[in-house]
Each structure stands twice: as structure tokens, then as C-alpha cells.
Length: 165
Image (cartoon, rainbow, N blue to C red; front, side, top):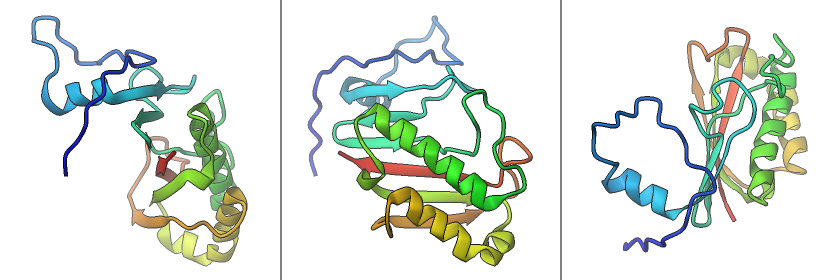
């Protein structure tokens, strides 16, 4: 298929942590993404300025994984997978809201889970919390991946989504 590039000015120019002024500007895929990006969202949390929480390209929102942290970056519901699912989805909704979207716009999600057997033991409660976040049983593609750790040791789940507007 053909891709149409539309010249649009990004809402935010992200600093590139490894930027070297002696190198030429980005070309290829990164340059095309910059030209078609219609917005970038960062909130005031750890790693702000290093990663974007969401990037809109055309009618698609690509989100960084959202975890169970509050606005100050402190873990919410340590040791409670159901509570962490609820907070992670609240953070997903916050990012989507920045772009005028809701969880109804999510088309796929990936869960990164540090304790899959523990999640399985609480599957009914976990997936009830998911359905509550979506306002009903979601019609999305979902992948669950077991991982050894997330970036803070008390985090149990990270939820990454793609949404279409």
C-alpha cells in the first residue's frame, strides 16, 4: 500500500537524549514520522522528556506502556494486580483523552505482566476491572506477555495500546 505524507507541524519537539549536533538531521522513517505526527503527549512523570506517552500519526495513536503510577510517579496498589490494572487503565484513558479519544478507540493492547500465574489466579477480578475500564467487554485484540521485571520492582503490569480516531 502507499503511504501519504502530510506536512504538519508537531505540537511538541521532543529532545533526543542521544542527539549529537555534529550528525545530520534524521532521515527516512524517523523524518517521515515527524512530518506526519499531529501530536505528542508527555505527562509529568518519571522519564518525562525521554519518552512520549503517546504519539498521534494520522488517525492512529501509538501509546507507550502505561503502569500503575500516580501523577508524581509513585506506585499505586503495590502487590495488588487488580488495583494496578485499574490505575494503568486510568493512565491509558488520560493519554487517550489528550488526543480527544477514549478507551472505545482502542483497537489493540499488549499487557506485560511480571507474575502470569498470579494474574491467572485472579483472572476473574482482573478481567472484570478491564471490562469496567472499557465500560463493558472490549472489542480489542489483546496480547499478554510474561516478563521478568518492569522498570520499578513493585510494578506488576504495563499496558500498551494502539487506538484509532
